[in-house]
Length: 367
Image 1 (cartoon, rainbow, N blue to C red):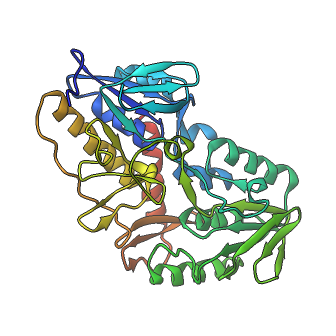
Image 2: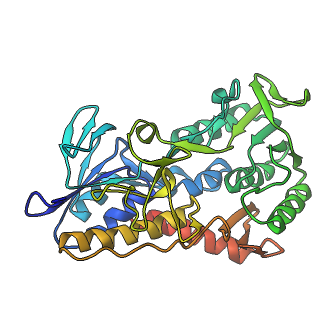
Image 3: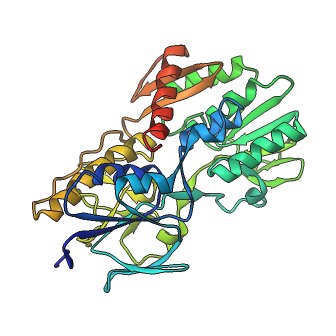
């Protein structure tokens, strides 16, 4: 396939989250590329800081950066539009207000909340977007709910509970369908986190499948229920609607990539981050900000190789599901570090300081 149809290789990036923004930042220094970002939002958001914001630790400005000034500095065009579909034969992206063609397409639209068909779940609060997180914090500040239930005990759910547990006068419950907290991480981390949460007075409910969410509480499949004034859903993600509508190879709904982070069977389409299934040499990449940043940097280097006609280099997964890496805030200025089966047995301030520095540095680099 003749990828280059003009003097510069036009790279259209769909999605201005961590992956898309980091790709632009790294690709901007490469020669031979014309960069176009398709993103309806006007700012970059650091989702890793949403629990901190919900807990009142930081403000909106500390976890966001304006996109337009950033794109101008990177020499990239920012099309504030929403991509709807792609014509792969003509290499054209159709958006709500515009159409544009590409030489190379990079799909990083991320993921959206997955409610798994649970009745009433879409009415719960979430912290998967900035708008929803702001709405949840406003409700907490105005309504001052005494009982809050958090559904899902992945890193986001656990961090959310830890920040909320610091509020005086609140009873916090965390609900997990599996038989342990942090089910995608090691058993050692699950044991540690249950000990930490119990020490904070959090009610830990594992092995509980939610059947419905109603006003005033949560109903479980075993016939029991939990009364609460606020429910926050953090129990999983699914591919963005754009990905669901694309006729491309997928696994479990996620875009299936090759060793170069191209969509399988497509020389002109790359994908990484939350929307992609990246499995290389038996290592399945985790859907984390850290891994997405590394994938973005690698893709930027490969785009530069394409522009000068050099061969691509394969990607090597850093944070895999069998050896995950996580820094989890536990409230009160502390955090734990997890690497594979290893975890720091006691929450440490130095770990929280390191995690906070990483998250806030991510935002600052785009300002």
